Image (tube, rainbow, N blue to C red):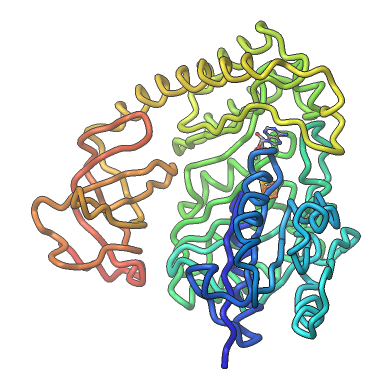
Length: 453
Ligand code: 5AD
Ligand code: SF4
């Protein structure tokens, strides 16, 4: 009889994709996934430790499982596992094993030991130069797939745990990436998101020696692949040839996520971000000079140690200058083992105030920018349905959410999930666009078979 496992994922897309790989490893061993921890013999948390809040969530989950532990094996995986190591057992003695995100290659061996009844098993090796290849990956989405191209991080940002949790940078051979992309296309996937903590630092380790731009171009040219995204980019490695590739290759989406973190060069220096405000803006200029309209999004940390009101104003003015399509903003959270944790901290209330001001400023920018899209037509890949509003949820090449209805009944009763739809944009808000269906093609039918008009 198969054993049931439950997995909950916290954190970024890398973690979401790692969970897909872990699911594949477990299914190959005869486990079956269950949607609730109650029915599971094996309960896994794939954790994040980027901010304290993310880590606390995991400990809260572990605490609530304590009373229901009987008959269950509990494993903590991912970044909080790597970050806390064996301390997890001290805080949560009912945990049976921990495995960090840099050690997933050891997962089958760890599971052997756990299945043999061993407890307090650890996989925390970070000196791995391998990437986590899991041929049995079980993806959660039938038309859009993540593909890891680089793991770990060699940057040295003063606030960040990732170099400790995910280990040193390792790029994957271009041949292996291309084989996965072709296989995905053959299985009907039409959208690929290339993943890496610093995705554009990719350097092909094989003799082929491809640059990141060459890889983008090649993935975009795989027959059947209609959209290619990549995240997250580091400004210091964002070279002009990436923009040229996007201009050349229609399959490469018009969207770049380029975390700036702060608009003040003084703060960027203390953060060890390796670029200045001016250099970042030059990079933005290169992206904006593309023939295709490339949308930018970013991450910002407010209240980094030593951030003055004037520094913060510089971040606000940078938002006005760049006009991002979307922004993720965070209050600085001190992380154990990182240099900035020892710096003098900005008071919590001040961080909260700055976060509110920043988000309000960005909301106005997005409202204005989204309004400019009204009246135009966009292609949306349909990702879901909002039954209550009788709307499909789609995403444009620029990574904007576009919810649309079908007032003329063009799609009949068809399930449009996975289809590419031409949508007339009729309205907008700060976070999304709304529209009406004009025409559609099925996802598998990107090869020309139009189901409508
Ligand atoms: N505190 C707050 N935000 C952080 N980030 C990374 N480390 C921290 C931290 N210690 C943010 C950065 C990064 C995003 C994924 O999380 O903005 O780009
Ligand atoms: Fe969280 Fe960073 Fe780990 Fe992703 S890589 S799960 S954001 S700590």
